[in-house]
Image (cartoon, rainbow, N blue to C red):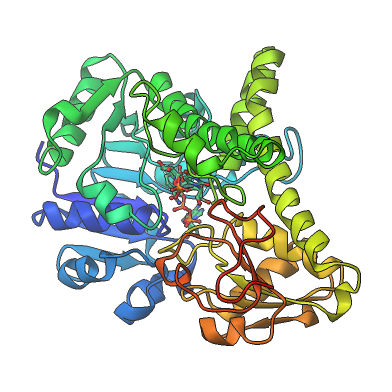
Amino acid sequence: MTINNICCIGAGFVGGPTMAVIALHCPEIKITIVDSDKKKINTWNGNLDTLPVYEPGLSSIIEKVRNKNLFFSNDIPQAIDNAQIIFMAVNTPTKKSGKGAGMAADLTNIISCAKDIARFSKSDKIVIEKSTLPVRTAEKIKEILLKENKEVNFEIISNPEFLAEGTAINDLFKSDRVLIGGEDTKSGKIAVNQLIKIYSRWIPREKILTTNVWSSELSKLASNAMLAQRISSINSLSALCEKTGADIFELSKAIGMDKRIGPHFLNPSVGFGGSCFQKDILNLVYLSKFYGLDEVAEYWHQIVKINDYQKTRFAHKILKTLGKDLKSKTVGVLGWAFKKNTNDSRESASIYISKMLLEKGVKLKVFDPLVEKSKVLSDLKSLKAKNTENLIVSNTISQTLDQVDLVAIMTESEEYKNIKTEALVFDGRGIYFSSDYTIGKPK
Ligand code: NAD
Ligand code: UGA
């Protein structure tokens, strides 16, 4: 069978960029991205400067492929019916209520996708788990598909995504690996091969790794947990550096030069953010507990706890430096998204730190070149932050630096590197705990 029609359910940070890159490399395949959020689909079909996802290089790809072989549509039934391959790239946040609340992944969106696929499919489909899912979710999906539609054959493949936001296009063009987990049956192997054929259009074959379904699902959770573990390790050591006079950057360099450890992901920070690290580790903790592995659960849980500790430590250090009369103090916050080059602020450390400062009566001026003003306020609102009337969203860096007592740099954006200010600077890239660190005139 020649693949010429793909559907992707979920037009978010994964669905948008991954399908754009497949569309670019496979011009003969028609790809339709659908989403239950109609406004989002309209925005994807709108102005290239205001696409729902900001990623360097993305809008120029969209310009090339949109309405040629990549389509954004609200017609979910039609897109499912037409497709031979269906990617599920819907969000899988931490559960807010019910069994496993605060820990387990909420699979409502995946279940609803599976039901839609079952309901609208009139021909055989290869169904791909692109979302990050708990190990053995494919079993559950299969159950739903079989129960709801006995007429067609569904082959379920795990193909987790490893892109990082801010570098998504580059990550997709030059993936370290593409992981495909399938069943060891004749039809399973055929389905895996169809996906290999697509990726091998631009990814060297030796970088496409095939495994069983459960290994693939679990590898994704484990990869994120191990990346986050490195950050929490270096952040925990930053606290020890402060006490001992060791320098966290020197430490990071010295550790990373050991080729068994490697230099990547050892940058100290105000704490990792983003929609995935915390939720995926909590999911791993939940799964470990579910299988009765309490020690394993506790080991991974510690990474999230250190991350919370680091955020709180940063906020406390700022408060301590500001001194007693906190209501008369203003802090400039540079960076609201969880890292540079993205408009995504989900779980950004900046939100939590700002909330803690606002609660103590400190006034804030916030700047982020990619995050909309309304998003800053809605992020704080969703955390039930107090005193939000004391926050101004600035339009420029210089507005943010004007008449503030302290500047907190939250992300590693280039434009924050050479700022000129007389205020005390707490630099989230690692130097922040040195209270005599200033840019411009010392205090
Ligand atoms: P997102 O919130 O940006 O996008 C998900 C989209 O799915 C939303 O637009 C939502 O409206 C839509 N949706 C949800 N349920 C739907 C349904 N039943 N029918 C149609 N549309 C539906 O999420 P994301 O960041 O793209 O993440 C998607 C998945 O990929 C998650 O499981 C995440 O863990 C994983 N992941 C994310 C990243 C990342 O960098 N964001 C990287 C790798 C993996
Ligand atoms: C991360 C992983 O890197 C991706 O491989 C994965 O696909 C994705 O999660 C996911 O599953 O969602 P992402 O969260 O987009 O990607 O971005 P990262 O570059 O990993 O950064 C995450 C957070 O860690 C950011 O807040 C960043 O500032 C912080 N970080 C990163 C550090 O504090 N120190 C570092 O050395 C690196």
